[in-house]
Length: 312
Image 1 (tube, helix red, strand yellow):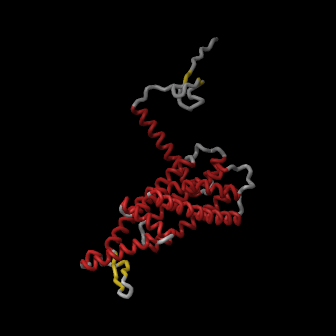
Image 2: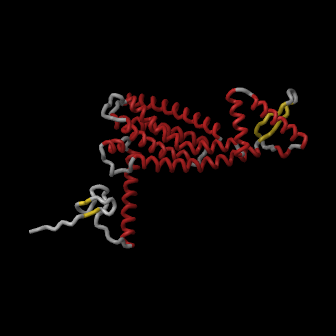
Image 3: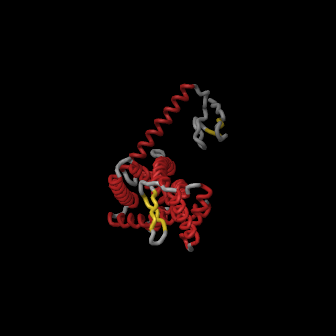
């Protein structure tokens, strides 16, 4: 009996396939004209598949520190969302919410600036001081207004003539104000837009710390530590979304303290599970990375502000 073999060419990549799926790209080789209900079925299937994977990933991220990293190291990568995709999604949500709240703060601060200034004349030395009060400059008489304006102008000129970093900052602030209006608002807006980039850069920084701390683990490469850093940052961003709860300032401080302690405990548990560290070592490594992380992030923030002032 002779068997007739038909050559199957993948319509997607042109690879010579054998059966119903292409071995190179994974697409089906026997495709028919799609119907409307077929589109609906495929959409629902992909949606619920992703939805199920998303909640399964979030459950592991939140309640099983280190589980996602171990699964990725063990090449179990179809069960959960990829580390980079998870980080991008959660961090995007975090910064979108953060930008929304920071915009509201700017509006409130501008209102205070416009209506919360008062000027007092110290006759002993003939200068004006600026403070906060409910009175406004528009309520002053014309002669006092002129004195206030001259005092402010003289103070600015003296500041611009001063040497060192303060003088340079004053000079750059004046130029930023001339170009963009409100210098403080401009710098704050630029800095807020740079935050996602700074935190993304902190992922390899944390991976470097882990590589140094676990230098004896020859079976682990830099990228393995980067996977751990991605998962921890994803947890951190999802956890600190709670800081945007609209509550009193005192309660907000308490919540921030609770969130910080939770993040540290999570890190300790993750280090113990992923790297098989002892309790004491995990605590020490957590403190070391926390110190190094804050120092590195603070340095990046200062460099970013310097770059903003130089290029504005």
